Amino acid sequence: MEKFKILEAVAREFGINAEQIVRYLYQEKHFDNVFLQKLLEDTQSLETKGLEDNVIVKLFWDTRIGKLRAESSNLEVGMFYYAQDQIFAIKRIPGKKESGVLSYFDPYSGCGLITALHQKKLEWSSDRLVLDLPNHSFVRMGKMMTQLILRKAQISRKSAEAAEYCADYHLDGICAGQAFLADRHETLAWCKCSLTINESLRQIEGADLLQNGYYFSSTECLPNGVYVVNLANDKVETNPKNLEAFVRPSLEFVVV
Image (cartoon, rainbow, N blue to C red; front, side, top):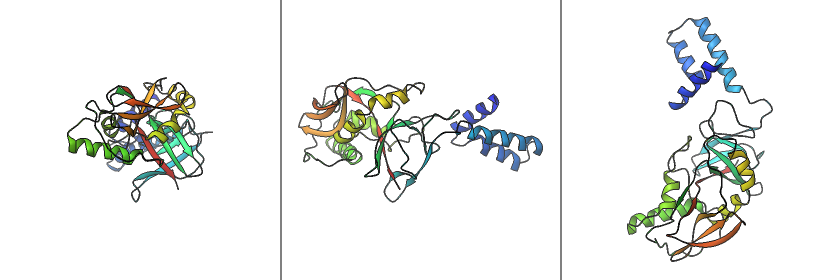
């Protein structure tokens, strides 16, 4: 079975899976059909190994709204997100690489967030980019706010390190342009679940744990200040734009 894990790992680098490789070999008649049939059965077994007694929720990309949609509301904070397979799983799936952790879900609105596996300590804007926008009180505005920050930074030729890091994030199967810097409401929502999120992150090799400290949001509060959430006490505070804080990319999803 170890050789099939290696085959799966190689296949994943090319955006496919082991079963697709075996089917190709079968169609091109590169090997004996009996051997390939056994190989196909083994790779299919590898695909399903670890799914027993697991809760799997499938997602798909809704092009109409430009968001991930989950096919079920049977979700909870701490579930593992697999970008390549477009699924959530309550337990880790052997042989597959995690992309993030479900960090917030509101069953009433059907909206949720995924926290990426990595973070950096950065300035929000080293040269104090000013958005000069009304202080919004609406929730789930992080994606739009990140786009506005980047647009304003481009026009004014100023830096926006935190938003740029999130928008450019492309690790573990997440594509550049999918992640964003959560707004103050979204950041507070997932920070309140930090203990549960860290329980899952500890199981993922190489993942960055959430740290006690300040996490930037995309919400501006003053010409030189933005809202941060202090993970030590889950309180919303303010931070100068040119003073470093943690930056954690997020993704959003909705339930069908």
